Image (cartoon, rainbow, N blue to C red; front, side):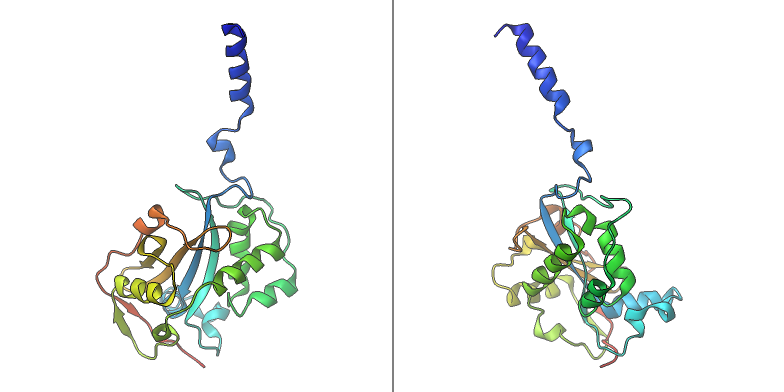
Length: 220
C-alpha cells in the first residue's frame, strides 16, 4: 500500500473512533463498580444540623438503620460518569418500594438511579437487582450491626473490621470516608460480576482523620 493511501486510511480510522471525551458518560461503558455503604446515623445527624431531618423519611423512621446502601456507582479507572441519560427512564413505584429495606428513602433511590444507574447500561429493574447482588456480597462486621452510644473509631479500624469479615477483600479494595468528625461511608470496589477488585484512585480518597465518631443507631 502506498504511503498516501495508508495515511488516508489512518485518518479515517481516527475520525471514526470515539475520543475519550465522547466515551465519557456513555451508558454501559465503565470499568468497575463502587458499592457505597452509608453510616445512617452520621447522615441523619448531619441532616439534623442542616435543619432538614424532619422532612427525611430515612431519619424519621422507627427502624434502626445502621449501614445502608447509598449506591452502586459505575467507575472509570480514573474518574466516573454521571447522569448518562437525560431524562432518566422511569422507575416503577413497585420497584422503589422493593428497594426501601436497603436504601431507606424514596428520594435516595430516584437520585441514585438518575445520577449513577443510568450509566450502568441497565434497565432500572436490572440495576437495582445489581445493587442487591452487590450488597449480598458484603458481610457487615458484627460490631457495626448496631452501635448504641457515640463511639470513637479510626478509619483503619473500620477498614480492618470489614476486611476480616469478608474473605478476599484487601486494603486496596476498600475506602472509608468521613466528614470533619464523623464516619461517613465505606466504599468497596467490585467487578461487574461483584468480585472484589483493587481501585487505587478510590482508596486514595480515604479519610485521613486519625479518629472519627460513629453516632449511635436510633429506633428499633
